[in-house]
Length: 267
Image (cartoon, rainbow, N blue to C red; front, side):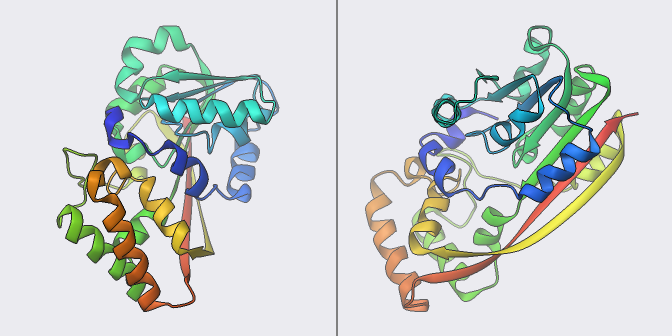
């Protein structure tokens, strides 16, 4: 994943992306028997949505992301919480082959809402050499971004229409690329890898969002960030605010988020 896809999004990412449900992380702790020992690699860590809450279950955590701004924000958050066992490293899945000796071995590798950006087969092959024999991977994601882009509620269709007016009909992936969702599901790719004995969990919950929440969430994405919008950002924001309030004058919008965890162990 190239770093410029999420350039300028870190501030909004930290504040407007939904946290992963605590019960989903509790399942990871139980299934992998996490007890404060060993090491965690959080690959594609963003601003630390997984690395920070999971840090208390490990002796050492490596948070790794290709976007330096994400790591700066993650370090600010973890330092503010007094967390001292996380190291933040610049790099992505394509850097694993070069960095795996430096990185060392891990009890668990977590990937949160980033696996779809990676060469998943190649990444799993590399991680199989980096995970301890009793260890595994936890792929955890949420559907909120996809739901805002492709949801069927009237307000969601309004959001998509305004985005497409200003940025074109194809979903963007940074300033100079477009996004195509992988055709194979994550669990299918994992099933043919060195990781097996998968356990899947899905948690649905409703989230009430304001206009500011929706805008902040969009500015945290690769397809409607302030960097992608450029000079059009103020006009885009004004039009979207007016359009959303035209649909729902209260300015409060309900979205159903789906959070999924895929846990897998080395065969």
